[in-house]
Amino acid sequence: MSDKDVTRRDFIKGTIAAIGGLIGTVIALPTIAYLLSPAMTEQEDTDSIDLGPLENYPVGIPTRFEMTRTRVNGWERTATNYGLFVVRKSDNEVRVFSDICTHLGCRVSWHVDQEHYISPCHDGHFDKMGNVVSGPPPRPLDEYVTRIENGNLFVTLPPFKRSA
Ligand code: FES
Image (cartoon, rainbow, N blue to C red; front, side, top):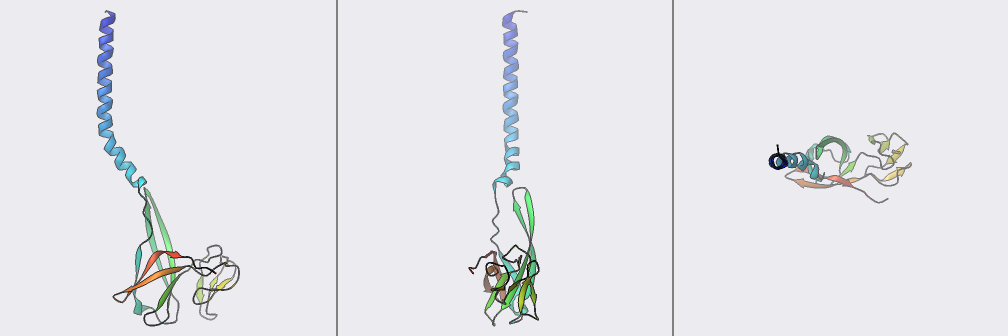
């Protein structure tokens, strides 16, 4: 066996390996792109949520509404539980507040006897319109932008912060 034969054999082996690698890459690229594409996209949580007919909410009484939203970020799915208080001031005037205390994030509940939302963690109190009455919360409850369409109440996520 001469050196020339070995070199030719090596050349053929190298060429076959290169062609095999190229074919493998061409086949793998769409698969890799498919697997990576969800990770490259991010879904903003700025949706409009239908809270149902406005007439379901009594005037003057904060009424709780709960929902769970699933957010997809790449391959990651996150379920978030939202609690809202709908306060209907009149037939067509409504405000919607988050139930997350602005101190350290405990969930507030409406106490009819005191007419306050109360945070159980550090006894933070808010009035019916979400303004701080007492306790450590630094600012009012966050509020949602509302819209009434064909008699149904909609809010837009996420809620916005109000200044103290
Ligand atoms: S978390 Fe509400 S008062 Fe501290």
